[in-house]
Image (cartoon, rainbow, N blue to C red; front, side):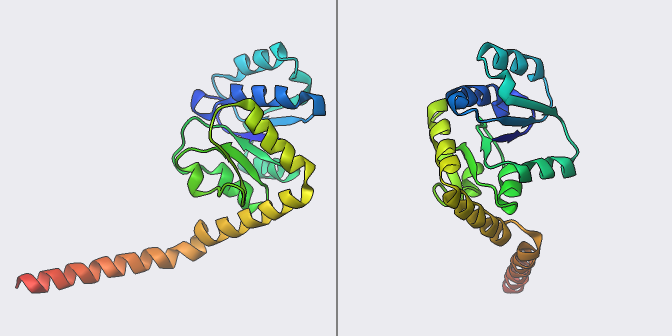
Amino acid sequence: MVFVGRLAKPKNPLFMIDILACLKERSVSLLMMGGGELDTPLRAYAKSKEVEHLVTFAGPLPHCEALKALCSARVAVMPSLWEGLPILPKEAGYLGLPVVAAAIPGVDEIIEDGKNGFLIPAYDPKLYAAATNRLLDDPSLALKMGAQGKQRVDRRFLRRHNTQAFIDIYHSALRNMLTASQVKK
């Protein structure tokens, strides 16, 4: 598993340790990339849950190194408490990596539950662990979801597809403004 994000409350990194504790019988490893005020408490929490040997704390990495690390993972997990339009599920999707994430606004614009990942409706580590296990136990499902994630990101979030849509919106707005100003004359 991989977690990428600030080690701060909104990203919910301590909850990642709870998820990992549910998976420790499997010896699932967790790569945590990011830095922040919860770094020290996170390490202590991993030790208290007896999973510190399963966690690699990579700290904040340059973007290109973080992307390489994402490529080495089998599933990205994102238990954020709130988000805008997050980058991680877009980058993971583009790299063909399925995502297990909180079913929250913003994330649900990128992840389609059951298609390119799983959206978990509650903060129950057993639910996250079950979704992660499902992907780890079924490589063909993980590959299928990864491929669908890549397609979704390609269609909805890449500049080459969206630039023309924005231009069309601006042209339409401009035409409407010109039409409205002509009607007023």
